[in-house]
Image (cartoon, rainbow, N blue to C red; front, side, top):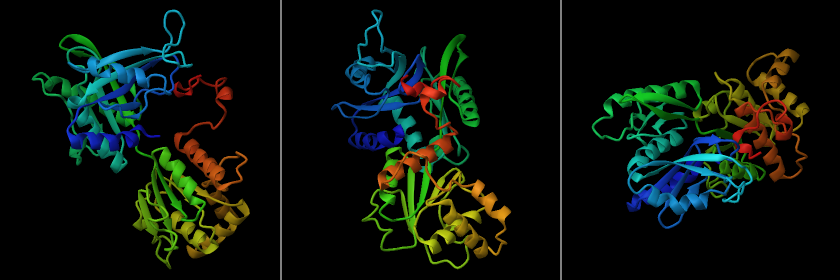
Length: 389
């Protein structure tokens, strides 16, 4: 799940009560690790925590020492899951080394405010943070809407010497933002080579689910567990209700529209979003598909539930609604842009397992992953850091 989505509710509660907290951020990994750089965990003084920095093996140890380690200033702490005697002191099977930036409210609050703004707006964010030396914990944040978003402006702790540092950090954050990548780099501050971590935070993934039927519920649940923005839209007002979908980010009753293309223009569907059409109504599915095909920019993932034969029939009807000839070439071209049937071949035969196959298919498409078992991927490329292999 998106760490920010887990952390923000607890952070807002702690901010409201004015109590201190510790934010832990993975800034580097050596060897294998369950979480990648950029993963975060928020610690409250009463023992509550949100987010993770490992697969469960480091969290208790981090919480035990975080408060006295950060008593004076932010620190970068090394946590090894294998000691010199090849034991595993934190119960992990990964056998790697994780470096965590630990910081209190004074430096973490501005960052969390920027993360909250980007999370709500579903925009990208990049953070350049100094990891060593007298300026440790100081940072600059670059957001996709820097020109008009106050929350995404430079965030630097004012110690009287940050003016010259701020511009360099901001430039590094912009590089991470533009290249959509996280990296470490040494910068020269006051004649000293200093390690800086530039962390790219991708926009929150979005799923538009065109269905408010019962089989939409497990799909909503899994997508929200992953921290995605989830919207449900359906023309059936008795199904598209807050009683049935109390936690979705957006809920719409689609109007009865005569001209395809009208309805989605009233939605906040973005080109980077996923859309799944599964109302089980031929008339409604065909009109929704016609509207989606009429958009200037198609969603990054467009899935249609059901056999491909039915989808072809839907597309023929969509072409008629759009006053276009339903030629074989046109239908084939549209099908090539879709995931129809939607989902991966997981042997799914229940609403929950079908939802899992659909979300897995979306995850693979949005991340340009292989979808192959990691045991097979290993022969092609290095195992990803979060595989704990």
